[in-house]
Image (tube, rainbow over all chains, first blue to last red; front, top):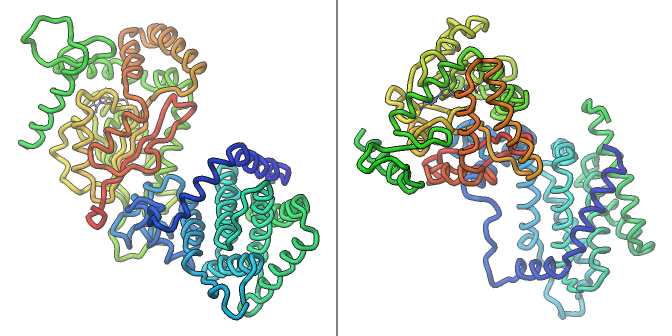
Length: 255
Length: 299
Ligand SMILES: C[S@@+](CC[C@H](N)C(=O)[O-])C[C@H]1O[C@@H](n2cnc3c(N)ncnc32)[C@H](O)[C@@H]1O
């Protein structure tokens, strides 16, 4: 897939979202209203198979074999993996969705107002983004397989949409409640920073991923310095676009 | 036994809600044969006659109906189900191979593909297919074709004459994968067939159906209707000398429920369906429907 194509589909996703900002915003609010338990993101049988399969990802990767092992563990058969219409992509999606939803409980901020150690929105965004990246630790050595699956043309739009949802979640949990036009800029920029850092992390060999943490901080610094939407987007495409294509090429795809 | 009799009663009741036939009162149960309304017993006979008369020209018929792409659909159908148990990646203590039942399998088309896929893609030399068809002539054609494959005299391939609505010779909870390709629209009681499928499948087993369906693009639909109603019976006449059989086939396709209706029937039979329940092929000329029999744990 050419980078131009990636760019078009990303812009397509953004544009589609921007035609219904009011609805999107309202859903966001409903979705985040703390009074209601969230509906389970997957139906029970799918959930059972996927959660069992997820435990096999570190050893067997994002593969059909992992799904079959999960099906067996959940009391199903190899053939029952047909319950997942998108196959291994459903497992990738499971990781993305469950880790996004887990952020809310995994990250706590110190009580505000005590001894003036109130965290700013920026610091919260950093903390949340880092927490989400750390949720990849157990499977990071397998994450390039997942990225290659997400880069398949059929799954690119869904993958971008999920990335946007993650950015929304992080901004929301950080307490940024603005409904102005900067919302789309923020979403796009954070999406870009998140995915380039994640790509960096797949190649990071440093102890406890300190290099990844540094990489994230540098990107956030750039954001503050340059602050531009277009800048962030361009860099994201350069980095992720190229690495994904190189990865696919290394797997023998003719692109 | 008693249970299945009772079920077919309820199916009959359901069928009475379709527009009443113009025949005199007090007549036996009726059903559809293409667009004609006829008695149920007669339908079984007439369907039999259609397939007896097209058994040998069968491939050309499928080619006309599918604009030549039924082979690709079948390839996709089988590849996507990914039959077979790879000995390299699965623990050896488990049972070996899948037990597949191919209903209305007539010419063996699906069965050979399943066995090929299991053997070459999954290195599985144990997966078995039972081909069941109501029509002995189709089975004869299938056995003849099997001679050209490595499976002819192996225990991996079996042919049985059976009505999909009453699979008494197949034990309950014994099948991993039940397939039916271009067959179900010919069944007199589709609900009864679904119920039998549910019974014979193991918990976690999969029902998979490939069938002509409803074209979802209005313009393309108009063109396809013209083609199927106008040209196919005529070609049937020219190629196979049998206009009526081909007319029936075209009409039976047009009568078959839409994708969502059929998916609801699958759910009503007790299956879980993946995603929206079906996948359209070539604009909905055909569709693949799947259902998974729930395992105990998730009931
Ligand atoms: C169009 S052919 C499909 C053959 C093959 N599955 C394929 O895809 O090429 C339909 C088959 O359904 C069989 N059939 C019709 N009614 C049936 C029933 N009630 N039970 C089992 N088979 C039936 C016919 O005998 C015929 O062989």
